[in-house]
Image (cartoon, rainbow, N blue to C red; front, side, top):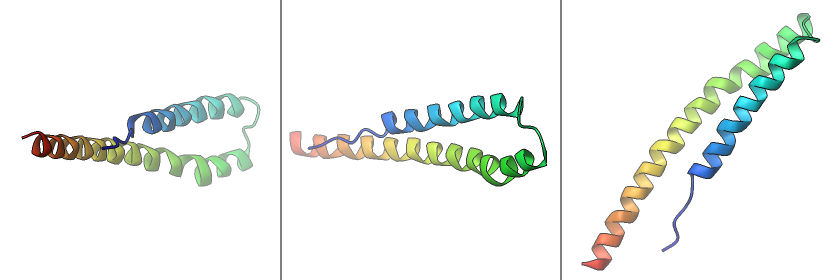
Length: 78
């Protein structure tokens, strides 16, 4: 049976979110006007909670899939 690896994708997503935050902080040093504030409010802010919520959901799904894989393995072994 094929096992699916959700953790590596989730780790990449978490790293990308962290990198975005770092890059945004760097960009704010030179781009700090009304347009940058609007961009942050419209594009960056909404991403943070959505990505965090997605990562939590992926974690829960990984647990469910691991439990299902164990159950199937136990059922075929015994």
